[in-house]
Image 1 (cartoon, rainbow, N blue to C red):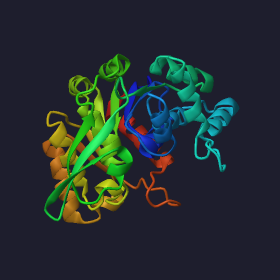
Image 2 (cartoon, rainbow, N blue to C red):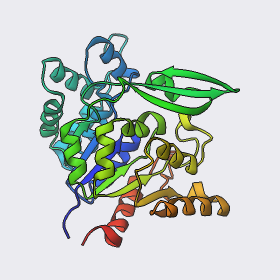
Image 3 (tube, rainbow, N blue to C red):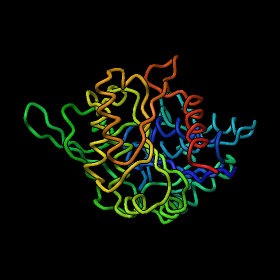
Image 4 (cartoon, rainbow, N blue to C red):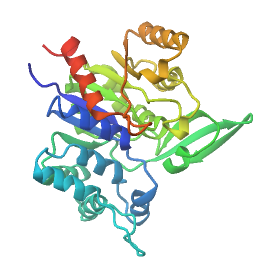
Length: 316
């Protein structure tokens, strides 16, 4: 049984969980990461340097560090944050390392590959686009539309999500990312902040075209519940799928994965199953929640899920 070539799309903690789970199944992993963060350490570095926000890229690298003393120690170093009363307060070591490489005019992907070699990562980490981006979203509150710009602002915006835009519009994808998508056996999307980490991947035209064209089996991982992402709170699993359909009506998924907690209502569960089925996919419902933390996926349960899907249909 050969290891599948897997491309994982997303950002932040959701992508970190997916990557941590996938590495038990395969070493051929490409993480394609959203690059629009403007908060925290990443936001401060973007204000000072014309670089990609390093935070989500750093987390993906840490998730794929080799599972030995060297890799585990470097994963901890990359994630370490300074605590002080000075300018370094809140900065992560990995963010500063990536910023230093990019500031010396190193190609962003070459810089990521260099850090990946240092960490002995399992796979590769790539940016979603060829340039840093901003996110702009429109929300409807009490019948009035309001436009919000910036990932951290979108993540905390109130109202019903209406539309999403990247700035600049229609950004170029990285050729390395497009090649990985077209050569993949699996492509995963989610979980995570739906508006600011998941949906932006559908707004890079070349990347979306490659996703539609790719013969890979596509797996959509839904969030644990309606409140996992404040920016999309109060929205059902069907709403999450509808948001993807609105931006990418030609994109379909072979498997849609839902935690058992979001389909407790039999009627809602059947509606979700019917929706997935009409798009040619299969709904898989399992307990994926980390018991010690209500709104996080259990990476061991996710790994078991991926192994189940692999044994079922995708390999061999």
